[in-house]
Image (cartoon, rainbow, N blue to C red; front, side, top):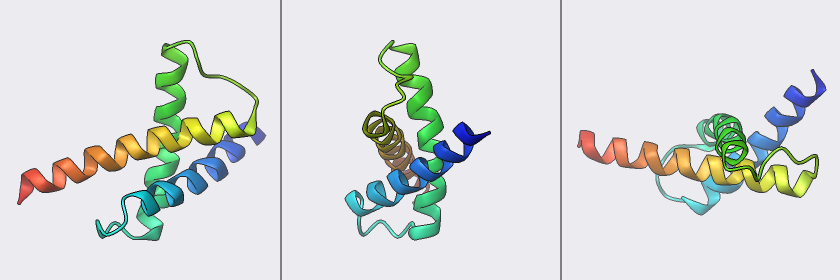
Length: 84
C-alpha cells in the first residue's frame, strides 16, 4: 500500500515538473499532476520491460515517472493537435 501511495506522490511531482517543461499547452496544474501519476505507472512499466526499472532509489523513481509523464503529455499534445 505504501508503494502505491509513494508512486502517486512521486508521479504527481513528476507530472508537475513535466507540466513546467511543456509550459504553455494549457493543461493546468491538476491535469498535469494526474497525467504525471499515469505517467509514473507508464514509465515504470516501460522501464521494467527494458530491464532498467524497479529501483528503490527515489531519484530513479522520480526520473522514471518524469519520463512517463513527459511521454503522456507529448501524446496528449499530439492528439489535441490532430483534433483541431
